Image 1 (cartoon, helix red, strand yellow):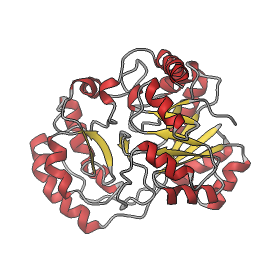
Image 2 (spheres, one colour):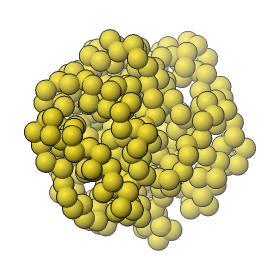
Image 3 (cartoon, one colour):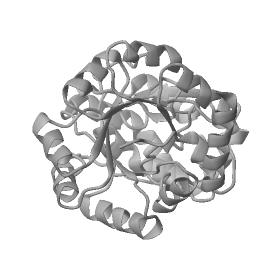
Image 4 (cartoon, helix red, strand yellow):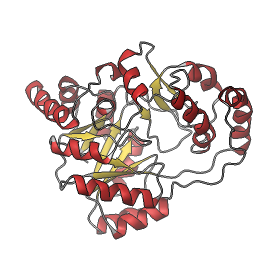
Length: 337
């Protein structure tokens, strides 16, 4: 399969929608439907809705489950967050059970009803799982953040790698949640990954215009993946306050574990400053722990406590149809090469 030059990142939690996937496809790119946070039934519904909107290939992104977090660390963070819960009038979950993001059921679904492209975040499938999905015809992309992760994905027999640089908004897709993310800028990281694999590379992180896309292609990528650039488009499912903050916020972005226990880049706010230094490694337990707080902040439009995922290029995010944006970016990249 030959991948298009531009792909829309799978922004879990509402940012990416079937309508956005279809619009990106219409503009000449490849849309990705996020499976993270969904059970298999909800994913099946999303795939069905996407197929009704586009007859072109699209992708599905899976979160790979990790080992459970340290319960004591999560409990200590819960106690620190209690004043915040009282301020919003919400209850924090006292017990958070095991959560594998419905991994096994989603694989069963995707084996029975394959999609053209599958990508993985937070790790890799097992060799047997990858082989089974290869056998049903799905093109598989591993998200990597280091050369070592790239080697592991290559040995697994995946078809391409999404090289995610530190500039990317939202979660950094490290294969181990306790890992300290590689801080090399995207062009340097691309070069380092290219040195250890011959697989096609998809560049991700801070890309919002044709010049940035052309630079990534010049650094060794075959394609690019954009997320924040699509958050303000007509088909985005992002909260309106989040969308507005992307272009009005002047406090910069920061990588934090405060909201989910995994490193993620977002607009810096008071919640990150107050709790980031104390947040434990613990995904998805911390994600579940802070969910009532984030939901309350979102309902109130409280930008000081919302999780406002954003890449470093957030100020350049634009409004309008995603199809038009995709086509324009393709033209810009072609002109800049």
